[in-house]
Amino acid sequence: QVQLVESGGGLVQAGGSLRLSCAASGSTFPLNVMGWYRQAPRNQRELVTTITRAGDTNYADSVKGRFTISRDNAKHTVTLQMNSLKPEDTAVYYCLARYWGGSSYWGQGTQVTVSS
Image (cartoon, rainbow, N blue to C red; front, top):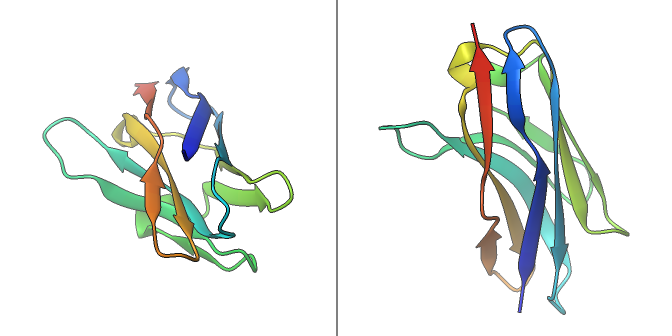
């Protein structure tokens, strides 16, 4: 059974930094894409950033230059470093793991709150 365990998040003032981590386990298939999505109240879940196994990244325009995604293929982990946080970054952040077999899984979500 695939499990995604997220850590990090919390409350920070605008301009501050937070780091999110996610560890995947339980699949016999290799991990392909890992990433982060977020969902603010009354909004749909939206892409934040993704990274392929080869290290190719994709960022939402709203976070470019402020957020950095990285992964450790050996440990099946993905990390999101968030700098220069803004109140509009406030949301529940979800880890995504997509395997070569085609299945995708989500983490349980972690709250990020940025105060002004």
